[in-house]
Length: 251
Image 1: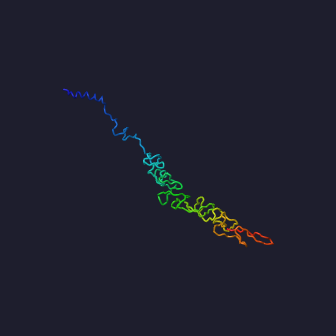
Image 2: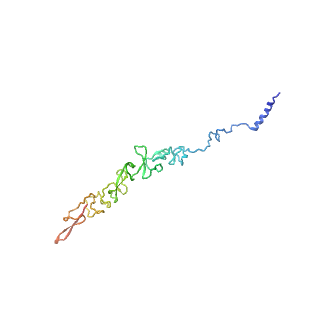
Image 3: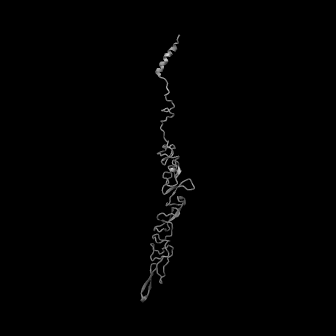
């Protein structure tokens, strides 16, 4: 005698399969991405640019630092450091010369970056021709004294100033390396004047001390002493009257 339940099952199972469909292996796994890969290969990623690559903001770079227009290994905002140097592109390195206008403490003209031979740490120092107070202020290492030279004869008066300069370098405009000019209105009057010369006229300051040595020397001695620039005369009386022997010259 046939089992009634078995007979019913034989007919109902095919009917249920037709209505619900069979399971397949194309259904996405709950832990997979939309394309079936782990995490989804179609996800949008940011901050992937390598060191040295061009960038516009920190979010462009895998390092998280966009400095000097390139992806950098650090913020690199110290004075006289840069990240866009070709020899070390993408790496924060010391600037050995030039300006650094984008540091936290900027270094711009009249200053420049300087890397001492005895150090790996650069500094921002004054370039030659800049006013200074001490040798350590200057890239050249020399803060020298110069003298105001109004007449351009390479000798100045007593007014002095201090500028960064190489040793034996050219003085800044309007200054001289040497002082001792006793008349800074006259380029002919200075310590370099040839003391073998004697002039019958004073300098622009009204002095005959052309060589600035503090001594007025006369070229000749008149029988009747006269001042510099004056005629030395001799009265010959009825035989010739008054004749001029020479004009007293001095230096």
